Image (cartoon, rainbow, N blue to C red; front, side):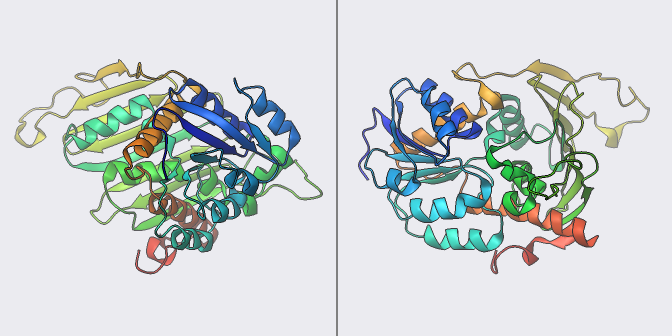
Length: 374
């Protein structure tokens, strides 16, 4: 597909809160123009139109947008359970695709998408913005550069508020979301894989619906989305990662705390403080006496990390802006997606494995969740 590299025309499929967040990012991105919107909900369309500097063409059906010839790339930000239908149509075109996480809500749909994407000319990129948050990106760079030696552990804690309301309350039910550990946490599992440079092997999890949404009813149904969990992910090298999720802990100073520990040091990223901490271990193998006790903070460097190239911070500390920069650069260069369909599907599989572990009380092997041969 021929693209004018001076400007990339974007269609937004799904104009809810995340779709509008993409519009804000694209407004700030040089060489980007939102030329088309698709959403069957008029209130969402109206809210999206209010953000656009130049009125885009509006469609109620995503298929009409895809065939309109108005776009070079499409951003899909519809409810999770609709991604399969959106992608069936989008993958049949030559358009470049940025699809919101989670890629799908079940493995059968994911396998179908992998098959449909074979031979596709355009880029297919799964949105996993956490890797682009400035202190997290710097942490990854340092960890991969050997700053902590051989990485042994990754831990991620998110203590936050409950899920926000969505159009039609679709996110109150696991059948629509894939479950909290898919909907909310697939980007964390992707981040674990990225930091460790390995594919997950086994998952243990414990969690439940303890506090949130218990007194809510939607057409007589009670929400079934869990609000808290611990998840441990094991990797072939013996490295481990852990997720600590609590969605009734909004009274937190830093809602997200990501830690990478190697045999020679430790890195910590805190959000929204945008703080990075880094400390090196002394050579414990040759020490004859004890030095400073743990917790003293001696030798730990603390700094705020920001990227001055970010023109719109938005809901994700500038990460979505950086992701759009990278996506646009890949389109112009004719290169591949930094976050592939396989990456997106594997992160979903880890979340599904965690839910299965909670349901059964047993560890779950990823090979029993992923397609054969993965």
